Image (cartoon, rainbow, N blue to C red; front, side):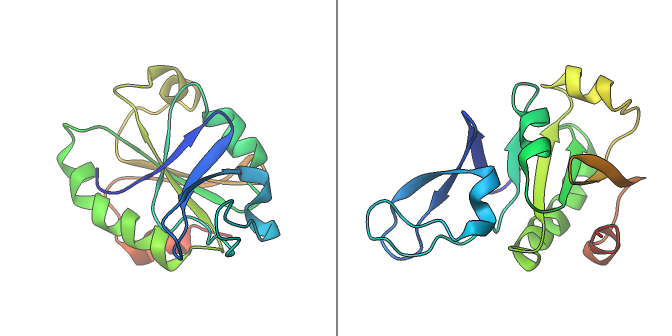
Length: 149
């Protein structure tokens, strides 16, 4: 799946670009200039996809201060694997403007069922906790970006 940002216990785990310290940042505080607990440098928003699961999905979507594009995928899915680099690139190019997340539908069937995911890859954009846009199938980075508000 590539490099991801972990979201656990209500916090994103963000590595400080200045000192390398791993910091837990509450998702709702991402746009409020969080500082590194060690060197006090400002922490950048995630520039890689956030890994979500059944246990943290709804909390993350509800609390996110930015639009969230979620890639619903599975490890055995060829088109999902092909779209992975576009999702990674979008996370980097939209850092600070939107959050990009991934949910493995194979390991997280509850969330996949809640959103009626029947084909993968499926992409859903959430804004202020609500579904804003969605699409099914392999997409290029430009197509994914055009789904954001």
